[in-house]
Amino acid sequence: MTDHIPQCERCRVPMERGYMIDHGYGVTYPMAWVAGVPRWSKWWGLKVKREEKIPVASYRCPQCGRLESYAKPGPWPT
Image 1 (cartoon, rainbow, N blue to C red):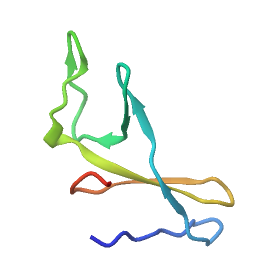
Image 2 (image 1 turned 90 degrees about the horizontal axis):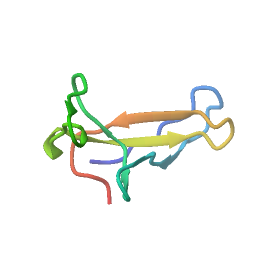
Image 3 (image 1 turned 180 degrees about the vertical axis):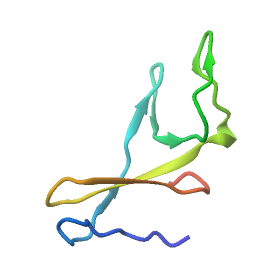
Image 4 (image 1 turned 30 degrees about the vertical axis):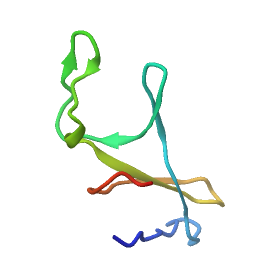
């Protein structure tokens, strides 16, 4: 899948790709999107199966700092 670089709607310049992080117990993960409402586990926070997660690509405008995030189905980016 070709990665389309969006333009900032305010500044009309190409945005730069990056990612937002999520912290677990002693580890850091890239952000993911999951459909539905949160299901809580008594012991481990949220109940989420690996196959339910969709990786989130995030883009930032280098001029104004605007962020845009997209949930793209498919393999996790390398």
